[in-house]
Amino acid sequence: MLPDITELCELVRSTAQQELMPRFERVSYQDKQDGSLITEADLAMQDSLCEQLLERWPKIQVLGEEMDVTEQEKLLQQAEDGLWILDPLDGTSNFATNIPFFSVSLALMQQGEIVMGIIYDPVRDECFSAVRGEGAHLNQQTLSLANMSEVIDIVTAIVDFKRLTPTLANKLITTPPYKSQRSFGSVALDWCWMAAGRGHVYLHGNQNLWDYAAGQLILKEAGGFSSTLNGEPVFNRSLVKRSAVAAVNQQLFKEWFSCIQLDG
Image (cartoon, rainbow, N blue to C red; front, side, top):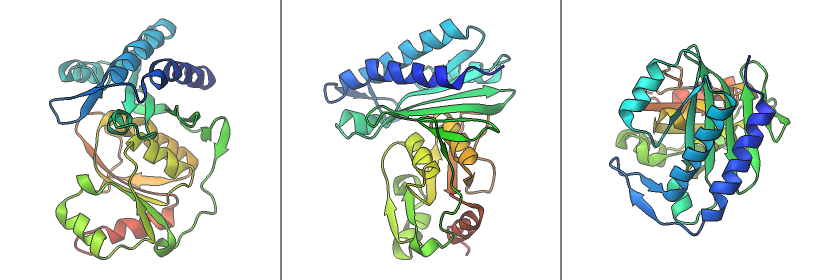
């Protein structure tokens, strides 16, 4: 039996309001070995949420972004009773520079598949959630991408140019197939904003497991489509970074995927 999604949303919400928001605009940051940032808020959120998850569901272990890679690998391969995949603060660079666009991402993996996802935006108090086969929701209201545009030259794209190859980035800069483009700085929220119709096509060249685990399920359950640049499913039970291509419906996905092929 899966944990109750309403209980889980409230747990993530209350913990983020307690651990993240009091530190927003009041916290310093450090560089990690991979060049990304970490703050006191990342660690406090991870420690608090991990402790509470284990109290409520002691058989389900937690893989957090700020854990050692060796520990992450061990958890990922030995998760017999399920595994929480947690990004305690997605959008740390935004958080550290006082930009109000960041989130908490939590996914539940069972038998090698993501079956539940929650992404919470504490600034807007928006909790996006999905259970596999049961649809996606925003604050308990159903998300549906039915009747979205299928015409690519009038849509808004969410594209992270920094993590694309120079060749692909240059192609999109010189001959953009869409009307407008944005980049916000929180991968998890990118997936959710797509699921809410706040963007129509999406492209990112290099996402971590905890960045996309919950988000790709939420988009799928809302009716969206996604794959890697190689046409594979985005979710992969490994720590190897993945590219992501997505759109709000199948027709737009096919056209968008065709547009970003370098031999096209």
